[in-house]
Image (tube, rainbow, N blue to C red; front, side, top):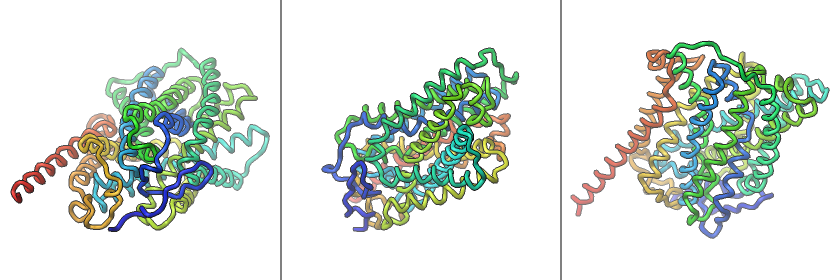
Amino acid sequence: MSSTGTNRVATDTAGHIEIGGIDYIPDGQRHGRPAGLFGIWAAANVTYLYIVYGGLLVILGLQVWEALIICVLGNLWWFAVGWVSISGPAAGTPSVIIMRAMFGVRGNKLFGAGLGALIAILFVILNVTFAALASTALFAALGIDVTPAGELLLLVAVAVLSLTLSVFGHATIERLSPYISAAVGVCFLAAGIFVLNAADWGYQSPALGAGERVALWLLGLTIIASGPLSWYTSADFSRYLPATSSRKAIVVWTALGGLIPSVLLGALGAIAATSIDMNDPQTTIAAIVPAWFYPVFLAAVIVGSIANNALTAYSAGLYVQTFAPRIRRWVTVTIVGAVCVLTSVYLLFLAPDLLETLNYLIEISVAVMGPLLAIYVADILLRRNAYDGLKLSRTDDASPFWFRGGWSLPGTAAMLIATTVALLMVNTTLYVGPIAAALAGADLSSIAGPLIAAAVYAALWQREQRMSTDAAGVTA
């Protein structure tokens, strides 16, 4: 039987490098309670990026009250992320292995591991970039001039700190997450008080026609939804829980850990946009907070970005490991870090407009992330969360998940159809899909993509089940 390193012992102790990666975790090595997931997800989402998202909604032309509603609606996707988390304890393996049930052993290398790695790397890059900008601003606030070479060194330092947590792995992240979320959360709460005091409550965005407003709402939903949609890897952080853990508790603690900070920070960014320029928020916020607090705020931005990167790089390392299972997880995490640093250098020093680049990267990635998450959610429902981690770990042609030549028709068809349609609906400054253009710029990709993916996958999966049942009956 061919497998992916299942003979290694997947030890998970805080302060020690996690030995396991994509390995199956036996029941005897499971530990923890679902409530621990709240701290992990809160720490990962008490991040500056959501403040930027909230401010971006107002910059695009939405009223503040509209931006606040969108921050809530777009983040409801966190409950889907919570639902995906229940597959971790059931299988005892990370998401990238579980997705073999949806795409097949070979198909998963493209749709699960390949696309997953690219998306995870994208968000690591964004966090490293913003943390580097905040680091430069922090030094400037302290009266220290930073040269371009110094900016590069700060970028590398942020990446190294993020990757250090990822290298140590699950237990260390879980142990530190509550402290990080509490410290950074308090800082952002204080910043929120200052923002509320300085807010221009009479602020009005430019008047828009009905069509333009609908288009902006849909665009805003796409931007906000990109946060939770990027976390369809949530089983990575629940897989160490005992298989008997409460599913409801796993869903609720995961969803609340992501939703609460995401909504509050998005709202903070939207309100801040009424009084400061959110095109350069890490420096302009100095105008509305006390001088003594500004460096504290910047430090919180840096720490929050590092915490988010710790989870994202961790998952990216697992994805990359599926292509080279003999390579240790900490090595794949290091490789991911090197790629992210090089790309962040481009964003900081060569990209013509950081926020514009951020905007179209997020929107295009949603065309992939939405269908992936929807197929995962649908598969858990269809299989009733009955995953066998040992069978999923097999990679030979006798694997139950080999399907047709290593590819699953339902998963492959659902991804190709839904992603194609979603890309035709995307509206960015770089590219406007023909469907979006026909709808006066309305971007339906974050809604239509997941719905189409789930519907196509469920229909084809059930068809194959019926065919298998009929074939078994004929044989008998």
